[in-house]
Amino acid sequence: MQTEHLTPARRWLILVAVGLFTFMSTLDSSIVNIALPTISKELGIQMNQATWTVSIYLIAVSAMLIFFGRLGDLIGKIRVFRVGTLIFTIGSLLCGLNFGLEFLLFARFVQALGASMTMSNSFGITTSCFPPKTRARAMSMIGIFVALGSVTGPGLGGLLLQVSHWSSIFWVNVPIGIFAMILGEKLFPKEPKQPLDRKQLDWWGTILFFFSIGSLFLGIEIGQNQGFNQPITVVSVILAVILFVLFILCEMKTKTPMIQLKMFKNSLFSVSLISAMLIFVTNFFASILMPFYLQDLLKYSPGNAGILMMVFPLVMMVVSPIGGYLGDHFDKEKIAVAGIFLVAIAQLGYTYFAADTSWWFIVIFTVFNAAGASLFQSPNNALVMESVEKDYLGVAGSINALARNLGMITGISIATTTLFSTMSKNIGYRVTTYVEGRDDIFLNGMHVAFYVSFGISVVTLIIVVGRMLKKSK
Image 1 (cartoon, rainbow, N blue to C red):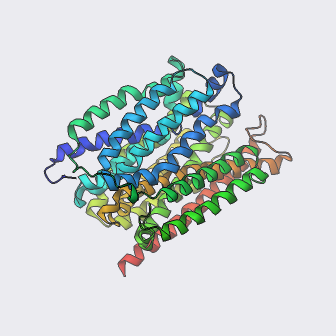
Image 2: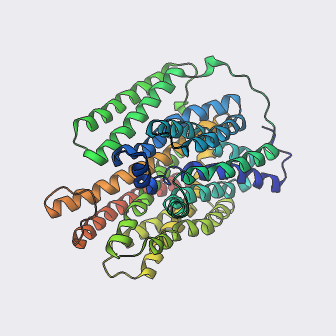
């Protein structure tokens, strides 16, 4: 990829084109949630059937990330990204056509295919286009798009549903996608044509990884709805472990592995990935629990609750560039440690939320959480991408995106499981939703869940401090 001649302005415009698809790909992981009751009613299906429109997207994206990251390394990251933008936009158009559940699931798979192609190569393109001295700032911008996509889905989806048909939550991607494709066509640097040698693709590894991730996420999805002690849940998770072990064995023996396992011998790469996943696990506790707390316990209207929830992405928009700037000019590890410390304070602060907590107290700890996550993610993403060889930037970026998805899904699962199992224990029977008139039961469950997230943030802090101390020796 010829990037030496790029002007600073062109580099940042390229980042906008990449960031728009990063935003939309992440947004579509959560925007459908709020439309599920409407989709269920209009398609005449059960609610648990409608939830598959969310699950199939997350499973397909996560299962294909590594393959398309490796493909980007082989034939060109921009080439794969461009095809992905077209497929994602077409998939978004198809999703809005009301042809029944089966067609919607097919369209969501198409959309996920395009999303995985763009998400897996966005970090690699960014790393290639920006020199080391401005790379953390560039990563901070990608972090903003990821944060906005992750958190604004329910709010934007609710707004669109108020003024339009549920198809609009998908069709809103089409004009943005077309604009981003035109922008990319004019701005992306030229890549030398790299013909694909099919022998370089690890087909067995791809198949094993696809079904391993699919089985794992399927087990988590079923476990959340039916319980983690159900036979089908246990079998799905065990199958995922077996397939993953076979995948590792396959990667060790093949001449052209999808993932170079030696990458994980680099402690900087491995520790940065683990901490990235854990920070997303921690952040999604608040994303899941706060809507229940604000609307069901404090009796805020959906609009007012949405305004308070928007504090998180707005703070990230402000602080992420600051984190990127600090990462470019100071020690990245120290900036990351400061970020995790703020996140830990926020998780502990959430445990003091009560039935009479004022809105400004909620805002303070939301700001702490968002600012901490912003300060951490920008330098940490840069550390991940700087720790691998240039030929494996695509795979490294896709593994980083996979860690993010795993963190999101794991955070949702642990948060909901902790909340409802604690509530069930206290009330004496199994509950899977807010119990009207028993605010005390919910509050206790929420506090226990945030103690868990505080523990996870402390573990992350210890890991990141250890990384910093090791480097200083």
